[in-house]
Length: 271
Image (cartoon, rainbow, N blue to C red; front, side, top):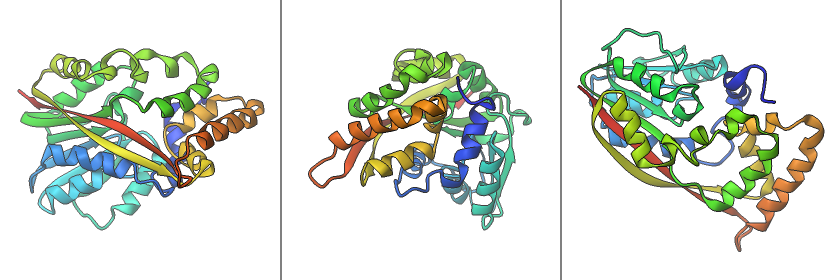
C-alpha cells in the first residue's frame, strides 16, 4: 500500500534533498522546457507543480522584473523551500496549490509550464484542460514528460513492482501505454484540451552516480521515494540489497553508473 498522505506527503518528505544530492537532473530537464517556451520579458508565467524551483527560477529570470512568475505545488515544504531559494527574485510568488484543479482566474497567464508533473495526477486530461483555461488567447503551454526509459533503469525499477499499488503500476501513468507512452499520445491530450500548433521537442539527459549508495540517495530524494515507501518496512532491506546488486553490476570501467533518459517537451498554443 502507498503512503497514506499521498503524493504530496511523499514530496514533502523528499523536499529537503530534492535535486540536491549531486546529480544534475531536474535542473537540466527544466531548462530544456524553458528554452522551448522562449519566455519574453514582462510575461506572466505559471509553473504548475514547481517543486524546489528548477523551472520556476529560469522562467522568472526570463520574464524579468517587469513580469510575474507564480509557482504552485501541493507539498507545503516544497513551497517553503522554493520561496526561500528564490527570495532574491521579486517577480516570483510561490503558493500551495493543487495541480489538478488550480484555483486561479481564467485567462491570467501568457505561459503555463509544468515539468514532470502531469503523470502524477488522477485525471491528466482534465488537469490539462484546466491549465489551458488559465492562458490568455495566444498563450503558450509547455509540459515535460519522459520519453522511452533506459532499459537498464527500467530493470532496476522493476524490482519494486511486486510491492506497488495499482495506481503506481497503471500503464496509463507509467508511460508503458497510454498518452505518456508516445508523442502522439501527448499531442492527443493537447488537442483535447483545445491547444493548437502542437509540437514536440526531445532532449537527452544523463544521470551519473558514483556508486550504488549514491543511486540509493538519489532514489529517495524525488518521486521515486513513493516506490520505496510502498515497500513494507520488513522487506526494505531485501529490496535494497537487490537494488545495490543490480546497480553495481551496471557500473562502467570507472566504477560509475550512467543512465541516459529521453525527455519529451510537448508545446501548444491557446486559441
